[in-house]
Image (cartoon, rainbow, N blue to C red; front, top):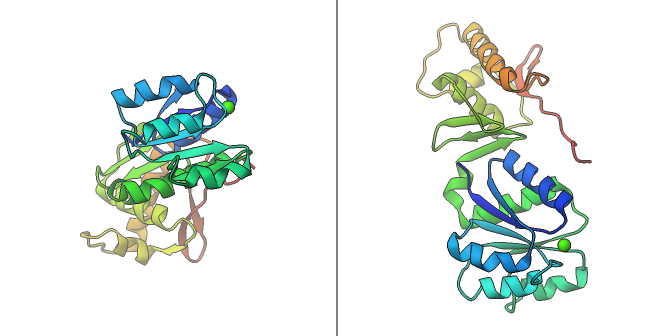
Length: 231
Ligand code: CA
């Protein structure tokens, strides 16, 4: 599942860090470390987006980008350590879609990738919510954690979707009940509680150390997801 991203970066640690974050956000990732590997690879199978470092062995990223543009409009995000290159990269000669300056935070890269893909693949991106390693695909009605499929009931799926769509919001039980459309709840407070309990159990089977759904006493529920892992 997931859109395909090609990362071209010869610094192994950076490449693997980016891969881990992007896979965590639900993308399928291929790594290449040499510039001259890119054109044959892309001609074989065009990815949905390319993250392209400039300083590469074999062929530099600028030349790679220029050659890609001769046959494909695949979105390219350039990675550069030199701010003075940016205007040229984004210009007609190279035609990059965005750029990222080194040093960067992996979260920033994921955000940029999502922003570019929202422009180029609006349907797929709108239908997908991600929270760390949890990916909810509305179109496929599928939730995965670390690429493991979660077996959810339609009500559990609807509850998780509501919470993930508004990660900072506190929901009352009534709001959660209404967000799961098509179901009538009798005495919904206790019903919601038991669905949330089941949902928590299924999530904690995959993420044993994390309580993703917090109870807000006197109000209801909200997502509680650890942030700042990379800061
Ligand atoms: Ca490099």
